[in-house]
Image 1 (cartoon, rainbow, N blue to C red):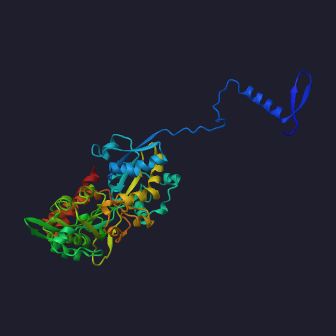
Image 2 (tube, helix red, strand yellow):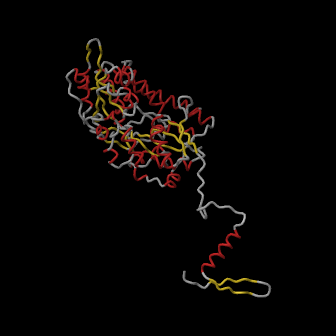
Length: 446
């Protein structure tokens, strides 16, 4: 080893001595000095200067699913990706079958996240758990420009210009049909782009009795579904007054009755059992029911397919205002930043791609790759006309009154009275309006 001059000073009493030594000697001296300084301390080999990472404290986020999240989806779409990125965070559902959201709020039970439909914000607003989560979203760096802009506009409509939640799944519509019933009666299958007039004619051809079984042509679900493309809103969100006697309501009532009459009173009950189990309804015009457990239950037993949702002849391809589901953060949460991290993660391309490929949900993100991958990993959708989900156009969602929920219940009851010939359409609508305004007046007195 080449020599190097090192100068070490030793200070004694009244004098200083300088020692010239080699590098080897210097290393020895430094080592001795270091040993002296660390006397009484113990270090593990290889840990000198290492920074010990302290794992975050475990956090359990409570979820109230106004829009139902199945146990399977909770693990696949929530806790699965969460555990990969944030192993200290777990999401647990509050059992909605045992406690209502109203009870959760009134008893101050902690909850952090919720799922909800955009039309339901007004219904629950008085409970006081909504707040503008824009600051939290900005901190988590969630890019809202990735979403279908109409969902963001619709969210702000129901949030008074704020953001009470983040969209995740669009509630698109379609016409589902039982191919075996069509084959049985020699009727051509429905096609994309059909008008309600064409659907009525098809329903007539399917409504027959055979071997003691009554087959029904079509079930349009409910008045609220038939009326959506007409953009109706039963209660003004500002004045909280009902106005349901106009032409759009009359048109929706009359279409619903026509569909009911040509289908042997199919709307006397819901379509679930007649379509999925009894297999006596030829067509169902409704929202995206591909996430329903009925489909899994009847896999391989129901020979079905779907086409685009029917439209009014003067409003082609129009399926009405956007309906969709959102994630939100409770105002009372003590873990808001963790909840925002979860929403940012659940809004990622990775999670949305998994969702559209396997669960039947339609993504609220605007990238066309999510439509292209729709149903790719879902055996129930193999060979089905899944692009029918995307052929209708939707307008931005409406702003609703907090009394809209009760109003819809009243409208549905009077719609059923009209179907059962209790009174004519004008009387039905006038009765509905009077009852809605009476109900609102009673609520305002409380």
